[in-house]
Length: 276
Length: 333
Image (tube, rainbow over all chains, first blue to last red; front, side):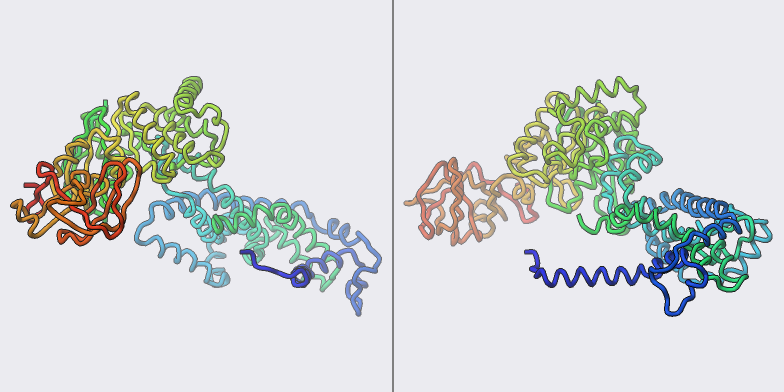
């Protein structure tokens, strides 16, 4: 039986949910608003919420000073490349763990996850030295590899849980029908796991897009993505809130838009299998 | 072509031996049913033949060639799964065409065979639907269609009807039997339902704990069960197994008498008891008789309608020529 909820209670809940949603969204909203203010209004006390002189000046200055498109392109390459490479490696890995598990499968999964427990800075030094030796510093290729490796445990974990939901009999049927391992993964498993794979891709693009530690430490002028673009506005010239906000807005806009349009897919993927 | 020979096939999972060494020959064109209680290893045996599990030792040959080391696809067998295992993202047409596509057949040949299979199975109107839009019986037919287009040397069925409701099950049972008559291809069929086994099989293999208890035609098993397990498993309602004094009279440790081989009377008989539950089927009445001093319950079948009430005294007379005798080990004497 459906639980009876009075209409009053319902409206309170709705208001509460909106309130919490707004609180969570407020910093982003504030950043976006600030980006349209003048520097003076940006630091005005008391803060001005909506009634200021809207201006696009910050954006033109930011665009003039640094090549936004180049940073954007680097972000696209790094986030897209590392995710794609990760998926290509993770699909067979998750397949084997989900459908032909060995005694150690659970341990391997835990071990992979444990690598995420190590603070990144703990391995910065060795990786930095490796990058110098291999000539990978400030290269897109190097960053794609590093970010792929960093997110690989999450990709494998997510795919593993999605694959577990797929009945093994269907894959056995494919085997009986004469499918090779490649065909089985390509024509049967992957299409069935599309919602899961899509949300994995999406989540990892977002993670890689926002990743700041490695992208800041391993890049300079050439391969810097949008995180480096924002960072370049925070330190050298003191704090210019309006310009920094404009830069931030430009950096988060693509991923925000992507997330907005794919939220249905994302939610469906994240709750995949939870409800039959 | 589809003779399957198992030679000393053994399977263990870790330390647990599920199937002790076992020999079995399934002849070309035969409808062979593996039947047994759940956990008896019948599905495992089928999966060994399919190649979905590797044998621990022993040899499986199909059409005179050893298939032990062959992957499932190379064995020339087709399988219908309990859950149907259809590809949910493909239309019925693509589901049926999948094995042909994997075999690399030309497009027009695939189209021809799919159309043919669809018309045989009454699926022509559903070819462009997804499995999710089909009823249980239709899904089952798609699964069978996917199996027949390959023209395999044998079909393997793993409890294919257990997800269907009772009425549909009877219908599909007939369809599968008819399919077998028409194709005369070897079929191996796994079920825990002895009625399915009796009605469909040329040859029944009764399994218990991985061991073959008896192999034979349905009537052989019915008339001459080799031991008390087969005696109790085959036939519905179950054979009455009686131990003690009444059995000793016949010079046996246990005697078995089927419900249909006991005559009932309200006046006189060899045994007597009190009527418990009566099941009225119209054509027959099954009466559960208590307090006979022979076994907890003796089930008897009376033809048509009989008028015994709960608690009435009833007299039973077994037909002497229909009594099965078993020794202390449960083996037929």
